[in-house]
Image (cartoon, rainbow, N blue to C red; front, side, top):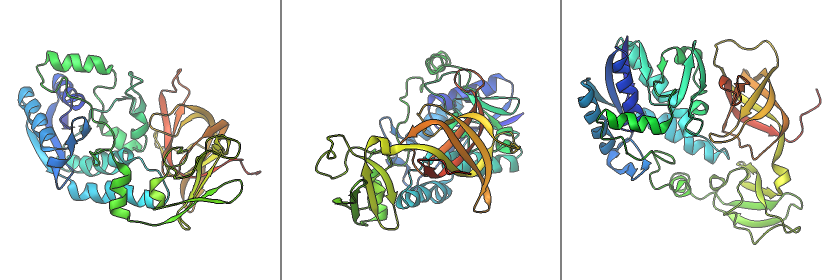
Length: 369
């Protein structure tokens, strides 16, 4: 097969490219230029897509003896990932930009160009597995990235390859060293790639500006403080609320709701964060087939969150495919804008991805049918 490998310049995609070559594929490497100022996008282990990363990827391609190109996707990345990220925070949501990047850049824009150029598959260094066209968790539970890949539909998965998903990360580094790849000990990227400083609040403030509002107590309605914008808050947040101290009962307060229309941030007790039901939109069913009724499953609502037992039912929300997720035990601190990823109980960790949706609404009590 002709395989295009997205090479970030890190150890994972480098080994993915090497394994694709070993498998006998006709391999070409490509590095995505995602910033108009790439020199500013790496600070140690923070950020990515810098000139340093492009040079690292090129050196790996030279060692492997494969063609290598740099493709400019900066405008598309800004529009589909960065602008969407900023807009979501302004709307009181808590987005995960990695999902948007996978959905709209790597496995849409890049994959479409790959197909147009005659490639059969797109390979990346993501930690996940594919078997019989189905997405599964990686062998390395600590590095598993199936959560941020669950937005991919059946057709996108059919063109994808994840060559490192069956191996633990330490072994990947050992393999890179054995192959003579200089990126073997390169630090992993952390935080959001386009915010190399790690200061998300400052990044958002520069783009959204000051939109003052009130921080109010959920129990009494009393205004406790003022804030400069709802983009500085997320559901479940405990620190940086700008309030004088804990509640009347001496317990900490947490952000329990965000109203972007009135710029009101409500804080309350930890128990106020418990939810019984999630309504998600933009449903994606990994098999390509919508279940014909409720499905017993497990749900994950954060990239590094745990699993909770649930029943997922396909529904229609405002004219688009959605999912109602009834939780068998309460979940705490679930934020709009995140993904709800559904796993089938196929093993202890729920290895098989059933589908995903974007969290649009949470309910403390499921309404009576």
